Length: 394
Image 1 (spheres, helix red, strand yellow):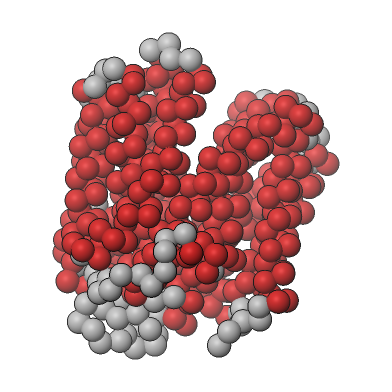
Image 2 (cartoon, helix red, strand yellow):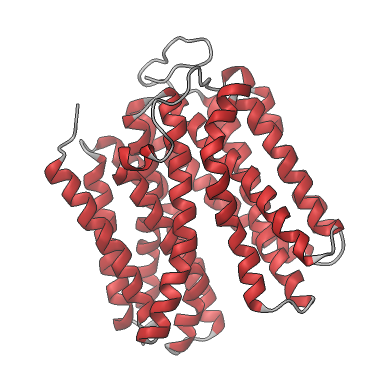
């Protein structure tokens, strides 16, 4: 069982609300800022006449930054402390977010992206480590469901804030930086309760990817499908005959499914004997839902209903995968595995849009659905194979 800084184990069912509030509030504030910053930067580059290819390349730096930062996060937290590392990362994220306004040279936005998304990646890794360490084993799914719900709301609030602030002047950049800095307040208030990493992880960073492959593969598929789906679904929907507003509303409904199902899915994961079975079921639902998309392109209401549940199942891969990770590992190993978890997510965010876009080019509009079916199919095969050949260890 994870220990707090005092070194005493937590009671089996006790939830450390102060620690959880600190970690969840911090990462939610960062989520709002990211949700504000992504469309803000894209619109500004578009106004400046930057080619779409370069806009996409600059945006892809987010995934590259996450892959670069993840392997070093646990080492920094081991040396300087979890809360201290998070606060420093928050300062770097806030400073680089202001840098986008003051540095007008487009090419300088590439290193700024690396700093900003590298710093926010560290906050994500250590927040999720903190949440997993503070959550009681028998209520871990519930806690992570609450985390996923609040984070989803934070990401949704970012674009809403952008619609209110616009893209002119320093205001949206200043607001974003202030929101990021606010994330440091709950961390500093609960810093004495932050989990310590008293020893270095036992394995090399990359070994943690294969140590709990059901969890790391789940977040890879989640990253590939969510980012690839969100970026290319409007193209798929408009090509099948829906209007842009109908396509946008379908994405909104998918996001609603993401929000409303996370706590129920998390609570369900607390009741199943082997979380891998739940991950397999959700991936199978995702596969069936994706395969059904070409059959629904003439019925908006039916597609919306499918996407509502589909969005919940896809997002559940992240919640339950993270819960499965926390049930298997503790201490320094959990922190390192959390870094590997985010690393796999970042790889998925880079691979997903490329694979889905290529599938559309090769197979036509329905290539969108078949590429997603491919991702889910691989995961179903992996998870079922693990359950057959590696029964749950007690």
